[in-house]
Image (cartoon, rainbow, N blue to C red; front, top):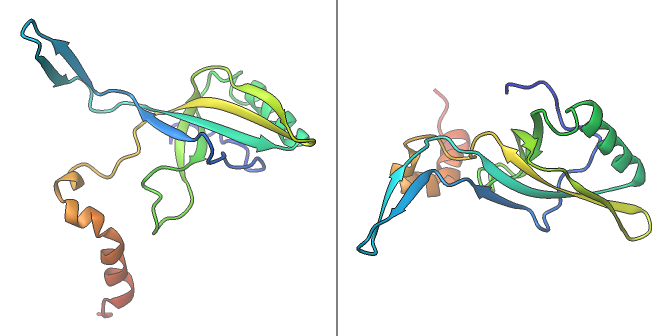
Length: 159
């Protein structure tokens, strides 16, 4: 990771509700006079936008806003944050670290119930979370990764 600034570990992970990944389009489409269109790849590495929200206590919300102002220059700097992606499947439950930045000012804190606050934001992940290059050519291996992992790490005989 290119930055040493981390999202505060004391703050909660993002909520599942409303969470989504939106990759930026890596190709250009040109309509033609015949009604058809031509497409071509324009970029090999595009960012992914992430809609995320956090549910925080008043103290956590205060910490978040202070961190936003002081650590990442009111949202202008990149930071490391744990986020979910399809790469965090059954064999890797949880989250992975991604290099992110805010694409716009967060919304909130908005009161939820008597003692909680919701903060919502759109983040940009510097690189699309994907399987390694070339693995898309072997769909059976990708879909069978969990079985291969078990065979290699649990059932494979010791040398």
